[in-house]
Image (cartoon, rainbow, N blue to C red; front, side, top):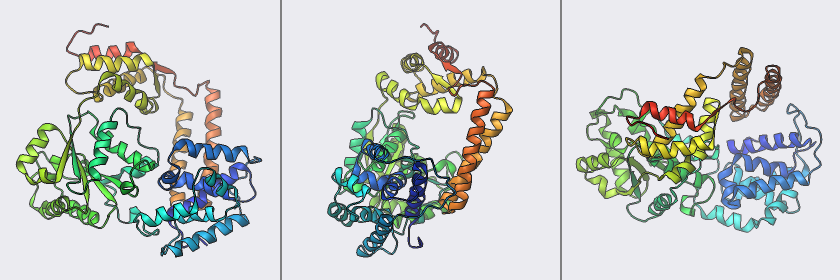
Length: 482
Protein backbone atom coordinates (compact mmCIF):
# COMPACT_ATOMS: atom_id res chain seq x y z
CA UNK A 1 0.00 0.00 0.00
CA UNK A 2 2.82 2.38 0.83
CA UNK A 3 5.17 1.57 -2.08
CA UNK A 4 4.95 5.13 -3.45
CA UNK A 5 5.61 6.75 -0.06
CA UNK A 6 8.92 8.38 0.77
CA UNK A 7 10.85 7.18 3.81
CA UNK A 8 9.69 10.16 5.87
CA UNK A 9 6.03 9.60 4.88
CA UNK A 10 6.26 5.94 5.89
CA UNK A 11 7.74 6.94 9.23
CA UNK A 12 4.78 9.33 9.71
CA UNK A 13 2.42 6.35 9.30
CA UNK A 14 4.50 4.31 11.74
CA UNK A 15 4.48 7.08 14.35
CA UNK A 16 0.73 7.63 13.78
CA UNK A 17 0.17 3.94 14.62
CA UNK A 18 2.32 4.36 17.73
CA UNK A 19 0.38 7.46 18.84
CA UNK A 20 -2.92 5.63 18.37
CA UNK A 21 -1.68 2.73 20.53
CA UNK A 22 -0.64 5.15 23.30
CA UNK A 23 -4.17 6.63 23.35
CA UNK A 24 -5.70 3.14 23.36
CA UNK A 25 -7.54 3.91 20.14
CA UNK A 26 -8.88 1.01 18.03
CA UNK A 27 -8.15 2.98 14.84
CA UNK A 28 -5.48 5.32 13.46
CA UNK A 29 -7.33 8.65 13.34
CA UNK A 30 -6.42 11.91 11.59
CA UNK A 31 -5.15 13.44 14.83
CA UNK A 32 -2.70 10.55 15.19
CA UNK A 33 -1.55 11.18 11.63
CA UNK A 34 -1.01 14.85 12.51
CA UNK A 35 1.00 13.91 15.61
CA UNK A 36 3.08 11.56 13.46
CA UNK A 37 3.79 14.41 11.03
CA UNK A 38 4.78 16.75 13.84
CA UNK A 39 7.13 14.11 15.24
CA UNK A 40 8.77 13.10 11.95
CA UNK A 41 9.02 16.17 9.70
CA UNK A 42 9.70 19.18 11.92
CA UNK A 43 11.08 21.22 9.01
CA UNK A 44 7.81 20.98 7.09
CA UNK A 45 5.40 21.51 9.97
CA UNK A 46 7.45 24.27 11.59
CA UNK A 47 7.49 26.17 8.31
CA UNK A 48 3.77 26.71 8.81
CA UNK A 49 3.38 26.43 12.60
CA UNK A 50 6.53 28.50 13.26
CA UNK A 51 6.72 27.78 16.97
CA UNK A 52 7.46 24.83 19.26
CA UNK A 53 4.83 26.17 21.66
CA UNK A 54 2.17 25.86 18.96
CA UNK A 55 3.22 22.27 18.30
CA UNK A 56 2.96 21.49 22.01
CA UNK A 57 -0.45 23.16 22.21
CA UNK A 58 -1.74 20.85 19.44
CA UNK A 59 -0.71 17.76 21.39
CA UNK A 60 -2.28 19.09 24.60
CA UNK A 61 -5.53 19.92 22.77
CA UNK A 62 -5.66 16.41 21.30
CA UNK A 63 -5.09 14.88 24.73
CA UNK A 64 -7.79 17.10 26.27
CA UNK A 65 -10.38 16.13 23.64
CA UNK A 66 -9.63 12.41 23.52
CA UNK A 67 -10.99 9.66 25.72
CA UNK A 68 -7.74 7.96 26.71
CA UNK A 69 -8.17 4.22 27.17
CA UNK A 70 -5.73 1.58 28.28
CA UNK A 71 -2.71 1.51 25.98
CA UNK A 72 -2.89 -0.90 23.10
CA UNK A 73 0.09 -3.21 22.63
CA UNK A 74 2.40 -1.96 19.91
CA UNK A 75 2.31 -5.47 18.44
CA UNK A 76 -1.31 -4.86 17.37
CA UNK A 77 -1.57 -3.72 13.75
CA UNK A 78 -4.20 -0.99 14.07
CA UNK A 79 -6.37 -0.24 10.99
CA UNK A 80 -6.88 3.20 9.44
CA UNK A 81 -10.13 5.00 10.11
CA UNK A 82 -12.31 5.93 7.11
CA UNK A 83 -11.22 9.57 7.49
CA UNK A 84 -7.55 8.53 7.42
CA UNK A 85 -8.11 6.43 4.30
CA UNK A 86 -9.58 9.48 2.56
CA UNK A 87 -6.61 11.59 3.74
CA UNK A 88 -4.18 9.15 2.11
CA UNK A 89 -6.23 9.18 -1.09
CA UNK A 90 -6.16 12.99 -1.11
CA UNK A 91 -2.38 12.91 -0.50
CA UNK A 92 -1.94 10.75 -3.61
CA UNK A 93 -4.01 13.24 -5.62
CA UNK A 94 -1.92 16.15 -4.33
CA UNK A 95 1.28 14.37 -5.38
CA UNK A 96 -0.12 13.93 -8.88
CA UNK A 97 -1.26 17.56 -8.96
CA UNK A 98 2.33 18.66 -8.24
CA UNK A 99 3.79 16.18 -10.71
CA UNK A 100 5.61 14.15 -8.06
CA UNK A 101 6.17 10.41 -8.48
CA UNK A 102 6.27 9.76 -4.75
CA UNK A 103 3.98 10.70 -1.87
CA UNK A 104 5.77 12.74 0.79
CA UNK A 105 4.99 14.38 4.11
CA UNK A 106 3.92 17.58 2.36
CA UNK A 107 1.21 15.67 0.49
CA UNK A 108 0.00 14.09 3.74
CA UNK A 109 -0.33 17.58 5.23
CA UNK A 110 -2.40 18.71 2.26
CA UNK A 111 -4.51 15.55 2.54
CA UNK A 112 -5.28 16.30 6.19
CA UNK A 113 -6.49 19.78 5.31
CA UNK A 114 -8.66 18.49 2.46
CA UNK A 115 -10.57 16.28 4.93
CA UNK A 116 -12.16 19.50 6.19
CA UNK A 117 -14.40 18.15 8.94
CA UNK A 118 -11.82 15.96 10.66
CA UNK A 119 -10.27 16.81 14.04
CA UNK A 120 -6.77 17.36 12.59
CA UNK A 121 -8.01 19.78 9.91
CA UNK A 122 -9.89 21.78 12.55
CA UNK A 123 -6.74 22.00 14.70
CA UNK A 124 -4.75 23.36 11.75
CA UNK A 125 -7.52 25.77 10.71
CA UNK A 126 -7.70 27.19 14.26
CA UNK A 127 -4.04 28.15 13.86
CA UNK A 128 -4.57 29.94 10.56
CA UNK A 129 -3.21 27.21 8.31
CA UNK A 130 -5.24 27.18 5.09
CA UNK A 131 -5.17 24.67 2.25
CA UNK A 132 -4.76 27.29 -0.51
CA UNK A 133 -1.88 29.03 1.27
CA UNK A 134 -0.01 25.79 1.93
CA UNK A 135 -0.47 24.72 -1.70
CA UNK A 136 0.82 28.10 -2.86
CA UNK A 137 3.82 27.95 -0.54
CA UNK A 138 4.77 24.42 -1.60
CA UNK A 139 4.40 25.31 -5.27
CA UNK A 140 6.35 28.57 -4.88
CA UNK A 141 9.42 27.12 -3.19
CA UNK A 142 11.49 25.13 -5.64
CA UNK A 143 12.07 21.77 -4.06
CA UNK A 144 13.42 18.41 -5.13
CA UNK A 145 10.84 15.76 -6.13
CA UNK A 146 9.21 14.25 -3.08
CA UNK A 147 10.79 10.87 -3.65
CA UNK A 148 14.33 12.21 -3.66
CA UNK A 149 15.62 12.59 -0.14
CA UNK A 150 18.69 14.65 0.66
CA UNK A 151 20.43 11.50 1.84
CA UNK A 152 20.33 10.14 -1.71
CA UNK A 153 22.58 12.94 -2.94
CA UNK A 154 24.43 13.68 0.28
CA UNK A 155 28.25 13.56 0.51
CA UNK A 156 29.80 10.50 2.18
CA UNK A 157 28.53 10.20 5.76
CA UNK A 158 31.99 9.36 7.10
CA UNK A 159 33.27 12.77 5.99
CA UNK A 160 30.21 14.94 6.50
CA UNK A 161 27.51 15.67 9.06
CA UNK A 162 24.06 16.98 8.19
CA UNK A 163 23.63 19.71 10.82
CA UNK A 164 20.06 20.46 9.76
CA UNK A 165 19.06 16.85 10.38
CA UNK A 166 20.92 16.93 13.69
CA UNK A 167 18.83 19.97 14.65
CA UNK A 168 15.62 18.20 13.64
CA UNK A 169 16.67 15.26 15.81
CA UNK A 170 17.18 17.60 18.78
CA UNK A 171 20.94 17.01 18.91
CA UNK A 172 22.02 20.68 18.72
CA UNK A 173 21.88 23.12 21.63
CA UNK A 174 20.27 26.57 21.36
CA UNK A 175 22.53 29.42 20.30
CA UNK A 176 23.21 31.93 23.08
CA UNK A 177 24.58 35.46 22.72
CA UNK A 178 25.32 35.35 18.99
CA UNK A 179 22.07 36.71 17.54
CA UNK A 180 23.84 39.65 15.86
CA UNK A 181 26.43 37.44 14.19
CA UNK A 182 23.74 34.98 13.09
CA UNK A 183 21.67 37.72 11.51
CA UNK A 184 24.79 38.85 9.66
CA UNK A 185 25.32 35.30 8.37
CA UNK A 186 21.73 35.07 7.10
CA UNK A 187 22.02 38.50 5.46
CA UNK A 188 25.16 37.48 3.54
CA UNK A 189 23.63 34.16 2.44
CA UNK A 190 20.71 36.11 0.99
CA UNK A 191 22.83 38.44 -1.16
CA UNK A 192 22.99 38.25 -4.93
CA UNK A 193 26.78 38.39 -5.18
CA UNK A 194 29.63 37.16 -2.97
CA UNK A 195 27.29 34.98 -0.92
CA UNK A 196 29.94 32.85 0.82
CA UNK A 197 31.29 33.82 4.22
CA UNK A 198 34.08 32.92 6.61
CA UNK A 199 33.74 33.22 10.39
CA UNK A 200 36.99 34.68 11.70
CA UNK A 201 37.76 34.28 15.40
CA UNK A 202 40.11 32.61 17.85
CA UNK A 203 39.63 28.94 18.63
CA UNK A 204 36.94 28.39 21.24
CA UNK A 205 34.91 31.58 20.71
CA UNK A 206 31.97 29.65 19.21
CA UNK A 207 32.24 29.85 15.42
CA UNK A 208 30.79 26.37 14.96
CA UNK A 209 28.00 27.20 17.42
CA UNK A 210 26.86 30.02 15.11
CA UNK A 211 26.58 27.59 12.18
CA UNK A 212 24.70 25.11 14.36
CA UNK A 213 22.43 27.97 15.40
CA UNK A 214 21.67 28.58 11.73
CA UNK A 215 20.85 24.88 11.30
CA UNK A 216 18.42 25.09 14.25
CA UNK A 217 16.73 28.15 12.75
CA UNK A 218 16.27 26.29 9.45
CA UNK A 219 14.90 23.23 11.25
CA UNK A 220 12.45 25.46 13.15
CA UNK A 221 11.33 27.17 9.95
CA UNK A 222 12.44 30.53 11.38
CA UNK A 223 14.37 31.70 8.30
CA UNK A 224 13.59 33.63 5.10
CA UNK A 225 12.08 31.58 2.26
CA UNK A 226 15.39 31.36 0.36
CA UNK A 227 16.76 29.21 3.21
CA UNK A 228 13.60 27.17 3.88
CA UNK A 229 14.75 24.06 1.99
CA UNK A 230 18.45 24.40 2.77
CA UNK A 231 20.65 21.80 4.43
CA UNK A 232 23.79 22.80 6.32
CA UNK A 233 26.38 20.08 5.78
CA UNK A 234 29.58 20.11 7.85
CA UNK A 235 32.72 18.71 6.20
CA UNK A 236 34.50 16.64 8.84
CA UNK A 237 38.14 17.16 7.81
CA UNK A 238 39.38 15.35 10.92
CA UNK A 239 37.82 12.14 9.61
CA UNK A 240 40.03 12.08 6.50
CA UNK A 241 42.56 9.24 6.70
CA UNK A 242 46.26 9.81 6.24
CA UNK A 243 46.44 13.40 7.44
CA UNK A 244 49.83 14.86 8.27
CA UNK A 245 51.08 18.18 9.59
CA UNK A 246 51.15 20.74 6.78
CA UNK A 247 49.23 18.62 4.28
CA UNK A 248 45.96 16.76 3.96
CA UNK A 249 45.63 13.65 1.85
CA UNK A 250 42.21 14.64 0.56
CA UNK A 251 42.64 12.99 -2.81
CA UNK A 252 39.44 11.41 -4.15
CA UNK A 253 37.40 12.49 -1.11
CA UNK A 254 37.47 16.14 -2.20
CA UNK A 255 36.53 15.18 -5.75
CA UNK A 256 33.65 13.03 -4.57
CA UNK A 257 32.25 15.69 -2.23
CA UNK A 258 32.73 18.44 -4.80
CA UNK A 259 30.88 16.51 -7.47
CA UNK A 260 28.02 15.64 -5.12
CA UNK A 261 27.67 19.30 -4.08
CA UNK A 262 27.49 20.28 -7.72
CA UNK A 263 24.28 18.22 -7.92
CA UNK A 264 22.87 19.23 -4.51
CA UNK A 265 21.29 22.65 -4.99
CA UNK A 266 19.99 22.94 -1.43
CA UNK A 267 23.23 22.21 0.42
CA UNK A 268 25.49 24.81 2.07
CA UNK A 269 28.85 23.29 2.95
CA UNK A 270 30.42 24.30 6.27
CA UNK A 271 34.22 23.91 6.34
CA UNK A 272 35.35 24.19 9.95
CA UNK A 273 39.06 24.50 9.09
CA UNK A 274 39.17 26.56 5.91
CA UNK A 275 42.97 26.94 5.89
CA UNK A 276 43.56 23.19 6.06
CA UNK A 277 40.97 22.62 3.36
CA UNK A 278 42.20 25.21 0.88
CA UNK A 279 45.90 25.14 1.70
CA UNK A 280 48.06 25.16 -1.45
CA UNK A 281 50.27 22.43 0.05
CA UNK A 282 47.73 19.76 -0.89
CA UNK A 283 49.18 16.72 -2.54
CA UNK A 284 48.90 16.47 -6.30
CA UNK A 285 46.05 13.98 -6.03
CA UNK A 286 43.83 16.68 -4.51
CA UNK A 287 44.37 19.35 -7.14
CA UNK A 288 41.46 18.25 -9.32
CA UNK A 289 39.05 18.38 -6.39
CA UNK A 290 40.49 21.67 -5.25
CA UNK A 291 39.95 23.20 -8.68
CA UNK A 292 36.33 21.98 -8.67
CA UNK A 293 35.77 23.66 -5.31
CA UNK A 294 37.44 26.84 -6.51
CA UNK A 295 35.05 27.02 -9.46
CA UNK A 296 32.07 26.33 -7.20
CA UNK A 297 33.14 28.99 -4.69
CA UNK A 298 33.78 31.63 -7.31
CA UNK A 299 30.45 30.84 -8.96
CA UNK A 300 27.02 31.82 -7.65
CA UNK A 301 25.24 28.45 -7.75
CA UNK A 302 26.65 26.96 -4.51
CA UNK A 303 27.31 28.48 -1.11
CA UNK A 304 29.97 27.86 1.54
CA UNK A 305 30.61 28.85 5.13
CA UNK A 306 34.18 28.64 6.38
CA UNK A 307 35.85 29.15 9.74
CA UNK A 308 39.38 30.27 10.56
CA UNK A 309 41.43 32.06 13.19
CA UNK A 310 42.61 35.59 12.30
CA UNK A 311 46.16 34.39 11.65
CA UNK A 312 44.93 31.46 9.54
CA UNK A 313 42.68 33.72 7.46
CA UNK A 314 45.53 36.14 6.85
CA UNK A 315 47.79 33.29 5.77
CA UNK A 316 45.08 31.87 3.53
CA UNK A 317 44.39 35.14 1.73
CA UNK A 318 48.12 35.68 1.18
CA UNK A 319 48.49 32.16 -0.27
CA UNK A 320 45.25 32.17 -2.28
CA UNK A 321 44.13 35.78 -3.01
CA UNK A 322 41.02 34.57 -4.85
CA UNK A 323 39.55 33.55 -1.45
CA UNK A 324 38.99 37.22 -0.58
CA UNK A 325 37.00 37.58 -3.80
CA UNK A 326 34.41 34.97 -2.88
CA UNK A 327 34.24 35.06 0.95
CA UNK A 328 32.95 37.85 3.18
CA UNK A 329 34.56 37.87 6.62
CA UNK A 330 32.37 37.87 9.74
CA UNK A 331 34.47 38.57 12.82
CA UNK A 332 33.56 36.63 15.98
CA UNK A 333 34.95 37.86 19.29
CA UNK A 334 34.90 36.12 22.69
CA UNK A 335 31.75 36.29 24.81
CA UNK A 336 31.56 38.31 28.01
CA UNK A 337 31.14 36.64 31.40
CA UNK A 338 27.40 37.25 31.63
CA UNK A 339 26.68 35.66 28.25
CA UNK A 340 29.12 32.84 28.99
CA UNK A 341 27.08 32.04 32.10
CA UNK A 342 23.98 31.70 29.91
CA UNK A 343 25.90 29.32 27.62
CA UNK A 344 26.90 27.20 30.61
CA UNK A 345 23.29 26.98 31.79
CA UNK A 346 22.16 25.82 28.34
CA UNK A 347 24.95 23.27 27.85
CA UNK A 348 25.49 21.93 31.35
CA UNK A 349 23.06 19.04 30.71
CA UNK A 350 25.57 17.53 28.26
CA UNK A 351 28.20 17.27 30.98
CA UNK A 352 25.66 16.16 33.58
CA UNK A 353 24.45 13.29 31.39
CA UNK A 354 27.99 12.26 30.44
CA UNK A 355 29.49 12.53 33.93
CA UNK A 356 26.45 11.46 35.95
CA UNK A 357 26.62 14.55 38.18
CA UNK A 358 24.76 17.83 38.62
CA UNK A 359 26.21 21.36 38.65
CA UNK A 360 25.13 23.94 41.18
CA UNK A 361 24.39 27.50 40.06
CA UNK A 362 27.38 28.66 42.12
CA UNK A 363 29.64 26.27 40.18
CA UNK A 364 28.45 27.72 36.88
CA UNK A 365 28.93 31.27 38.09
CA UNK A 366 32.44 30.43 39.34
CA UNK A 367 33.41 28.82 36.03
CA UNK A 368 32.26 31.84 34.02
CA UNK A 369 33.88 34.42 36.28
CA UNK A 370 37.12 32.71 37.27
CA UNK A 371 37.96 31.22 33.87
CA UNK A 372 38.26 34.72 32.47
CA UNK A 373 40.29 35.91 35.45
CA UNK A 374 42.71 33.03 36.00
CA UNK A 375 42.92 31.23 32.64
CA UNK A 376 43.71 33.93 30.06
CA UNK A 377 45.30 31.58 27.52
CA UNK A 378 41.99 30.71 25.75
CA UNK A 379 38.80 32.71 25.14
CA UNK A 380 35.34 32.40 26.63
CA UNK A 381 33.21 30.35 26.52
CA UNK A 382 35.47 27.36 25.72
CA UNK A 383 37.67 27.59 28.82
CA UNK A 384 34.63 27.87 31.13
CA UNK A 385 33.19 24.73 29.55
CA UNK A 386 36.54 22.99 30.02
CA UNK A 387 36.40 23.90 33.72
CA UNK A 388 32.96 22.33 34.07
CA UNK A 389 34.15 19.19 32.32
CA UNK A 390 37.26 18.89 34.50
CA UNK A 391 35.31 19.52 37.72
CA UNK A 392 32.73 16.92 36.73
CA UNK A 393 35.46 14.39 35.93
CA UNK A 394 37.06 14.86 39.37
CA UNK A 395 33.69 14.50 41.08
CA UNK A 396 32.92 11.32 39.11
CA UNK A 397 36.14 9.71 40.40
CA UNK A 398 34.75 9.98 43.92
CA UNK A 399 31.50 8.20 43.10
CA UNK A 400 30.80 4.62 44.11
CA UNK A 401 30.76 2.31 41.05
CA UNK A 402 27.31 1.34 39.76
CA UNK A 403 26.23 -2.25 40.58
CA UNK A 404 27.09 -4.67 37.76
CA UNK A 405 23.44 -5.75 37.38
CA UNK A 406 22.41 -2.17 36.58
CA UNK A 407 25.30 -1.65 34.17
CA UNK A 408 24.29 -4.77 32.23
CA UNK A 409 20.64 -3.69 31.99
CA UNK A 410 21.66 -0.22 30.78
CA UNK A 411 23.79 -1.85 28.09
CA UNK A 412 20.86 -4.02 26.98
CA UNK A 413 18.56 -0.99 26.80
CA UNK A 414 21.06 0.92 24.63
CA UNK A 415 21.41 -2.11 22.34
CA UNK A 416 17.63 -2.56 22.03
CA UNK A 417 17.04 1.15 21.30
CA UNK A 418 19.70 1.03 18.58
CA UNK A 419 18.05 -2.01 16.98
CA UNK A 420 14.60 -0.41 17.23
CA UNK A 421 15.80 2.75 15.46
CA UNK A 422 17.34 0.63 12.68
CA UNK A 423 14.07 -1.27 12.28
CA UNK A 424 12.09 1.96 11.98
CA UNK A 425 14.53 3.31 9.39
CA UNK A 426 14.19 0.05 7.39
CA UNK A 427 10.35 0.10 7.64
CA UNK A 428 10.37 -3.18 9.60
CA UNK A 429 7.34 -2.40 11.77
CA UNK A 430 7.02 -5.88 13.29
CA UNK A 431 10.64 -5.82 14.46
CA UNK A 432 10.25 -2.24 15.71
CA UNK A 433 7.22 -3.20 17.80
CA UNK A 434 9.11 -6.19 19.21
CA UNK A 435 12.09 -4.03 20.24
CA UNK A 436 9.76 -1.41 21.73
CA UNK A 437 8.17 -4.15 23.86
CA UNK A 438 11.63 -5.38 24.93
CA UNK A 439 12.70 -1.83 25.78
CA UNK A 440 9.67 -1.39 28.05
CA UNK A 441 10.45 -4.66 29.87
CA UNK A 442 14.11 -3.73 30.41
CA UNK A 443 13.15 -0.21 31.56
CA UNK A 444 10.85 -1.74 34.19
CA UNK A 445 13.64 -4.12 35.17
CA UNK A 446 16.02 -1.16 35.58
CA UNK A 447 13.53 0.68 37.79
CA UNK A 448 13.20 -2.40 40.02
CA UNK A 449 16.98 -2.72 40.34
CA UNK A 450 17.39 0.95 41.23
CA UNK A 451 14.78 0.49 43.92
CA UNK A 452 16.55 -2.68 45.13
CA UNK A 453 19.87 -0.84 45.51
CA UNK A 454 18.11 2.30 46.81
CA UNK A 455 19.45 4.47 44.01
CA UNK A 456 17.83 7.80 43.24
CA UNK A 457 17.01 8.77 39.65
CA UNK A 458 18.93 12.00 40.19
CA UNK A 459 22.74 11.98 40.16
CA UNK A 460 24.26 11.37 43.59
CA UNK A 461 26.96 14.03 43.33
CA UNK A 462 26.72 17.77 42.87
CA UNK A 463 29.64 19.82 41.57
CA UNK A 464 29.99 22.91 43.74
CA UNK A 465 31.89 26.17 43.57
CA UNK A 466 34.66 24.62 45.67
CA UNK A 467 35.15 21.84 43.11
CA UNK A 468 35.60 24.37 40.30
CA UNK A 469 37.98 26.42 42.44
CA UNK A 470 40.05 23.30 43.07
CA UNK A 471 40.42 22.68 39.33
CA UNK A 472 41.42 26.31 38.77
CA UNK A 473 43.98 26.15 41.57
CA UNK A 474 45.55 23.05 40.03
CA UNK A 475 45.65 24.42 36.48
CA UNK A 476 46.42 28.11 36.98
CA UNK A 477 49.91 29.54 37.29
CA UNK A 478 48.39 32.23 39.50
CA UNK A 479 47.60 31.70 43.20
CA UNK A 480 43.84 31.38 43.51
CA UNK A 481 42.02 33.76 45.83
CA UNK A 482 38.27 33.25 46.19
